[in-house]
Image (cartoon, rainbow, N blue to C red):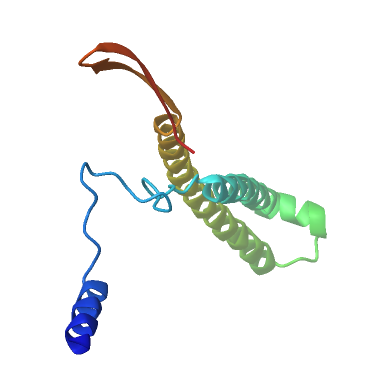
Length: 147
């Protein structure tokens, strides 16, 4: 007899708990997981975008100032055309790198702002809910608070 009770108890504990009638949830179970607020992506995107624009502007400025006439004015008549050409090429590469960095920053900004909007909508859904309540003997107002 004792073995049968122990077997039934082990079977009851091993099976998943039955759902509560009406779809209610346990007090410790959250209604839905909290979505990401996107603040880190917005910050990273803003930084990458700003630094990318600065790098692009510096690259363009370097490319413009390293034209053969201006390069000799800045570094003197003894500078070779090859050195000026190399610095000008570095300016073009730097401007391209800055443009790519700014484009990645825009992508991160967009991703973060979409996440932020989803988070704000989620916050609106989980606040105070007021709804009419109708009972067989009358009615009233039902308030639901979600934390």
